[in-house]
Image (cartoon, rainbow, N blue to C red):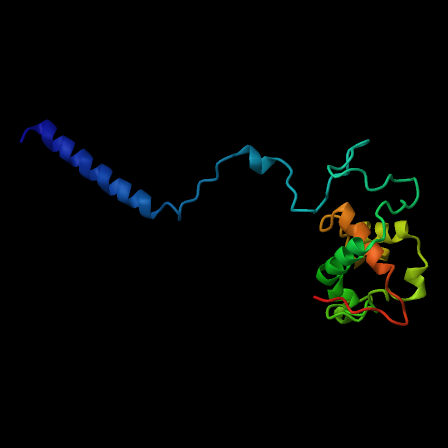
Length: 180
């Protein structure tokens, strides 16, 4: 074997050993590469949501115009709307407000602030638009404590009006039990 052949064999063996060592030390030796993703500000989901752009309209249309008071109910209180509202209530609201809508839901008892009795006069005497805004924006108490979460991302505009129409059918004396 010539000198160059031996040198080539030594280089290949050293390269092979170096390659094996690099494979096993890949996760041990961490190289901190600079990337632009690391030096820009980052936010966790919904940590600081950006405000809605001025004069922007949601995809499904304007639900209400801020500063113009409570909106009026555009959905007729017919059998279809009330039934849709009942189904949506049984999926979205029943956990806190309960099957009789009296605020005694499964989750409602564990909350710091008890859910509202939806069959009582306090809720039933509110205009439809006020109920819609409460469902849309939720209720936030002093110190940022959430009394009721906003459901505008869970329910479409039509869904929220259907829930309002269903709530109108509830009475303190004989509240119907929503079917799951």
